[in-house]
Amino acid sequence: MTAELAAWVRDRDGRLFPISGRHAQRVIERMANAAGIPGASAHALRHSLAMRVYRAFGDIEVVRAALGHASIQTTTRYARCDEGAVRRAVGA
Image 1: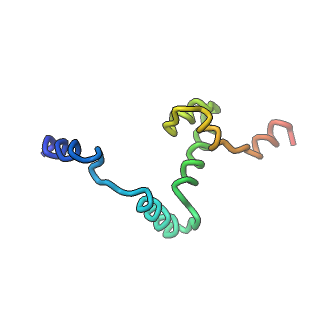
Image 2: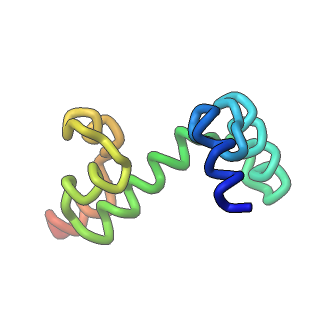
Image 3: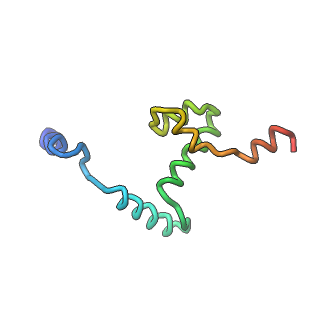
């Protein structure tokens, strides 16, 4: 069966279960609403991942790799200033 699935995937676009970006967005929105998190989006999830990875490792290159970006400039769009970190840095 594995060889048969591999042949099937090879004949298509590489995805076993293809899903459009819009369909994925609807699934995320539906699941987030069911969990009581209105307004969630795939983009918001990527921002959240970027910030969590940055907070955990403090290295924008690790964030770049985690997000699969070729360019660090793309990754910096996901970086947000952590106001709590700024307050801690200046002792406020």
